[in-house]
Length: 124
Image (cartoon, rainbow, N blue to C red; front, side, top):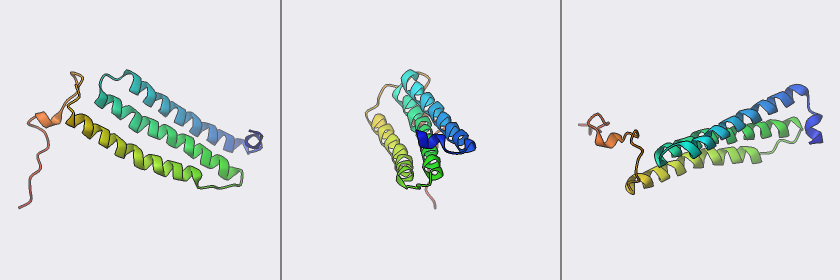
């Protein structure tokens, strides 16, 4: 903690900004996970907002370590792993929920059942 106090003030402000930005995104994602009505809407909140929240905190960690003179790739590897795995796992969970036909909230639209759904036309 003492090492952070020795950084220039502008660096401390930037680090604080990214930590607060990450915390706000993570809180919104967690809140959405807690209060949204069904699985499909709950899936959206943590995959988008919480990923951005963790991204902001990782950016703050990268700035902090590089400003102290020790640039490591640990934080960058964490960010790459997170941004690759979160969308993939969300897609797999959504496909599994569609196949098991989980109950939906009444306002959740399923475009597969409507006539205006995207229809793939094969090329001639």
